[in-house]
Length: 352
Image 1 (cartoon, rainbow, N blue to C red):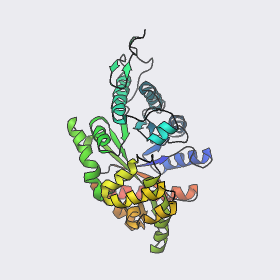
Image 2: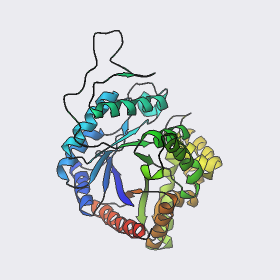
Image 3: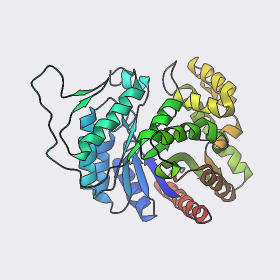
Image 4: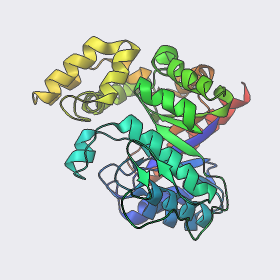
């Protein structure tokens, strides 16, 4: 298994501290660093900077949000970052949700599946280097009725650019299996993943004549090491409000892909109640409904032996790349946690 992490360049620290984390993570042997966008800093600007600071580690947009750039602009950005980094760039795309897309960008969230498919097709056509001509339900290039003719970029992609899709819904998972090189997943419970995720991914893979070996399954979770059971209990309690936010506060009042994902993995009743409480403003009540099992099932939190055992479960479930979110109060704490986790992933992967 490979190791990865996700950062946000504007994630509450001084910018230089985040850069230090990226540089030191590469020294620890991390394989991939994804840079988030969400409602903070944009991903491509930070990725270009980190490309100049690193030498070996792969760098990915995790994720660029669908609709905030035209498909051709996405391709231009991807080619630029790939060429600048010597082929170390991974293009991660995601539909995000109506709260961010409509609330922050003023763009309709409608038809994300169709827009994603057409965006990927256009990006691949641009990267291939030919004259751009595309006719779809969402995008038509050149724009009909005008004076433009098909054209190509003046620059060329010097390296392959793998495309990863962030997907949670069954339909987007099928598209990921059909059209992408990798899957950026979250809200992952390995015990329920076969029906909730992999069945849909495999259906998409079969459509394109591929197998699981052709798709990098990249799953993420917080990692934290507890010295004993008492410390573990405190860690789990501290994570419940964060999980309640995912179940109740992410997305809009009617659209929450995280809540849906947890529901498909055995927690439909609890997820619905948490969402109801959160939307009503009872944040503490929502967090109180989250069980220890839910926290431990979707994280890599525990004693070192517990984390090692859990990583083996992830490996056996079909995870290829483990995206680690290291806990810690300081930069040094997070790097220490990350270093220990990387060693465990290597150890578990070697036993496969």
